[in-house]
Image 1 (tube, chains in turn yellow, purple, red, brown):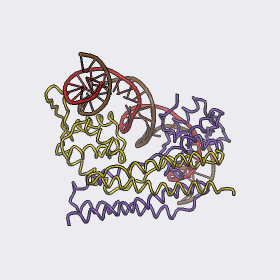
Image 2 (cartoon, chains in turn red, yellow, orange, purple):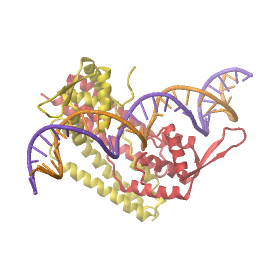
Image 3 (cartoon, helix red, strand yellow):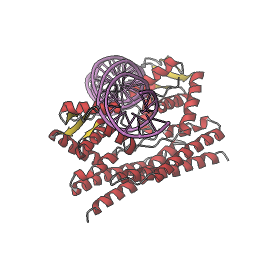
Image 4 (cartoon, chains in turn purple, brown, cyan, green):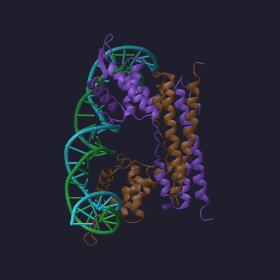
Length: 177
Length: 177
DNA sequence: GAATGACTAGTCAATTATGACTAATCACAC
DNA sequence: GTGTGATTAGTCATAATTGACTAGTCATTC
């Protein structure tokens, strides 16, 4: 009855955040979209969907907290089963290696459908976007604790990517000389 | 009326393959799952779905070819509008930089929920899987033409990833000394 | 000649994900 | 006092994707 569907990482992430301390939805979604965008892509409706599903399964509890007249917060907490599931997902995640896919390679594969000069110009734009991203990451304030690792991860892949892209551009511009 | 849905790369890929020469479905799906797995994740039902949709939109034509008693092949060909769309998608793909996401980072973020020795052992397994993948890629026969670039891409990201992972393992094993 | 596996076609129900929307409260600027 | 934007909640129709299945032919092996 293992649950291979509903990409586990998303559930792991939500469970992990709630485990650190009880949280409410908006807070998590906000945090994920800002601090953790480099790890997963998780939008609000999906988050609420998973949160409800995990509550139904018995991994979470929901409690409405109302402070003054503010719209009420729905606070999520981990149940013992939730903790078990968290442990399981965490172990699996840590032990597994997933390699990335590179949708950008598809364009490269078909690049010779374009005049070479045009392809090179478009790739130059891609390169500029990569550099911009790199600058952005370098300029970001240091992230606290473990998050530093995620930033480092992005940084090192950007560097690798730039090297590869420069090779591609170089090869392409030399072709047929 | 641009079509941002149905992740463009998948359409670009199908259009590009059909553009090279007319193809039938099985052939493409097979090729994508073996040679192009590092670029996209595209399963059969999705492929047929997109192929039908693009035919309905007028980018492709379908012709059934029957040789002898063999089950018929459905051969796809590009229409002029298909060619236009291919050009558009190709230009966009080449000019765009997309950074990867790293679902594996989620586990790392929560690694201290586990005894350190256990976390390290699990990460060692991840590392072994990465190395295995690396060996596999190195051992693969040289790919023809442009596909070499995609292999190179994977290779360089695996190297980067290994470096990062070793840092993480190292940091983690030193913590609290 | 029976079985197996590669080649070819698909389908369908179910799962997974999101864009775009509504709604309410509060703090602050103008 | 009137906006405007942040904070909190969500929903719903639709899009996107896939696992698991059916179905037929051909070549080859036992």
